[in-house]
Length: 218
Image 1 (cartoon, helix red, strand yellow):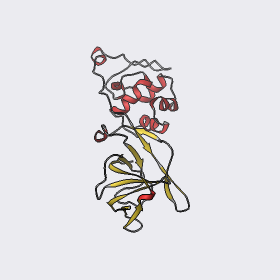
Image 2: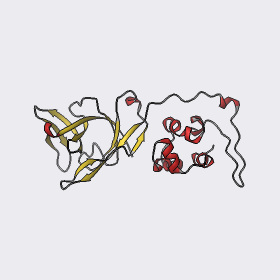
Image 3: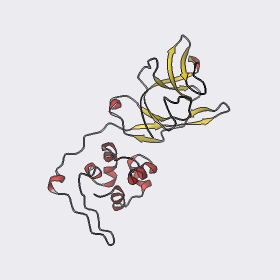
């Protein structure tokens, strides 16, 4: 089976250039090439165009011809059966990954500008409007949410009591907490560490309140 690294090299692309063309980052390309990240249909569809192959090639279903390198014979061309294999189904648009960083004297988390990466949408968000993902930073919600987990967020789903939420204040400070309830002038939230407690964020300080609908392990 032709490896992704061989296909990239045959296309004359660096990892950085392939990442740019595919709308992702160089570390993600490196993880795919080294097997740290699994090649899925979503990744295959995203990378096939820049590499000049069909998505089925990246999924190991086809065997493309790769120019011979020094001391290595050329790969075989596709068989007629494989050349007529149906194309992979159309995929939903990728969703952005957002990040927060510590800052300020009170060590609150603040949103960074713009997405830091793009990932394939899970099936349960394929028809959602403006979904995004966000990395967990800090330990205030352990064991429910752990650092480096990637939360999947639906910004238009109202939170139910007990739901995980991403709270963004008007000053762009961001909190990942548990939704408890609304009052007339505040949103009541819960965190687990350093002590299990409920606290309020006043509506005058609140920008957005988005619901966590799933997560992805690092």
